[in-house]
Length: 364
Image (cartoon, rainbow, N blue to C red; front, side, top):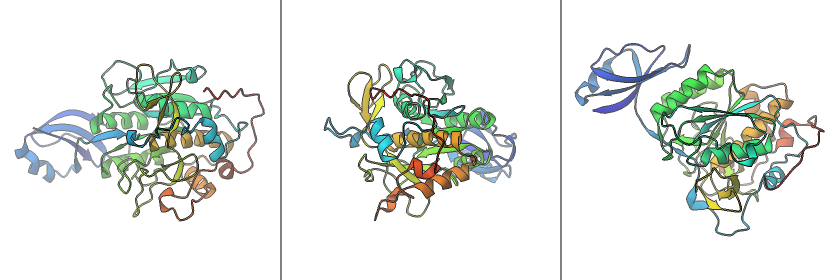
């Protein structure tokens, strides 16, 4: 039996072929719908000839965008949150992201970590596997970058990776169905993951989410000149990885024939919150680890987008993307950086600072 994802032009319809429909996905009006199906190989030509169907794709896997092979062995090579503030020009007094909700589409969030003590976190699990809030550690690390830079945001942990750190297209589509149906519940979605290759249909579903007003932030990937969905989607705000010294990370993905990445942020040797019982990256003091990847550059930008929305009038996804691109500092003779390294102050211009006292503890 073959497992495939079939896509319809509009609303889900009955497939007039001999196949088993496991699950259907409805993303709303004017958006491609989909079904996860199994069928005998002999029915392949029937599906391809069905006029209701606009695409047939494999149930491909997706991976987390962290890079275990590019973590420095030097104990002092650590990019702290203060390094992030310094390189990206984020004063401590900037808007904290009041009344903003960031969805972390990832492996979950372990809310027992002290960094989330004052953060409201809603857990949404579409994996149907149960178990720990984050048995991998990746989602907790990603979310910790957001809440340390934008401490007033609320978080939604949209879990798509199980305890084995794996996921497939059928689970990703469940999450996109949730994102489309609940697009008014959050302001920003962070996606620090990517498919192994480009999916044209998934890219279209992602672009339709942007058209609904969702501000997306997507990890560009860690495969050099290769990249996969959703970073390849039209209008996606994709983030490359640089070092704390402002140089591009050698693993950061780029597409010389496309628009990926758009900008870059620190994604090399980041100091990250550790989920209980996990071992992602290299252990540091306490519940902290060091890891590398565009996975950790993306949430830094997601936090800045939440802060931007807290400050500016133009909240449209296109307006946000163009503002961050225009404010970025280009790395000379470096085509892999997109528009350049994010500069928050240059992006927002003269911001009305939050003058309330904010305790800054480098331990967090």
